[in-house]
Image 1 (cartoon, helix red, strand yellow):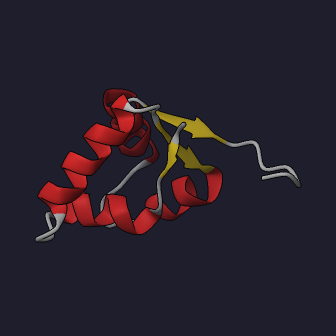
Image 2 (image 1 turned 90 degrees about the horizontal axis):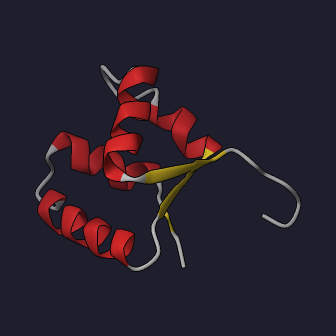
Image 3 (image 1 turned 180 degrees about the horizontal axis):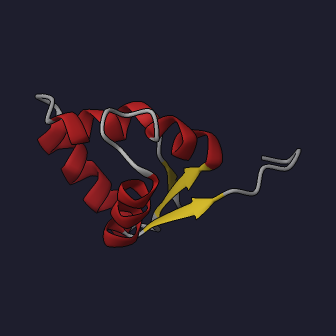
Length: 76
């Protein structure tokens, strides 16, 4: 089963907040248990993170194995 990511999780990780190590560990575990997925709204919100560019977000997703899912139908 894939784990869906929320904006606040990744922004806390990027900001190096006190919970960043725990977040990193949880994401690593979730990636091994089925993968990580990011929805279109989360992707767009991350573009508002200070100094984040489209290239940065996409590269981060590639390097961490996060699947970008832009399909938002009624079932979702």
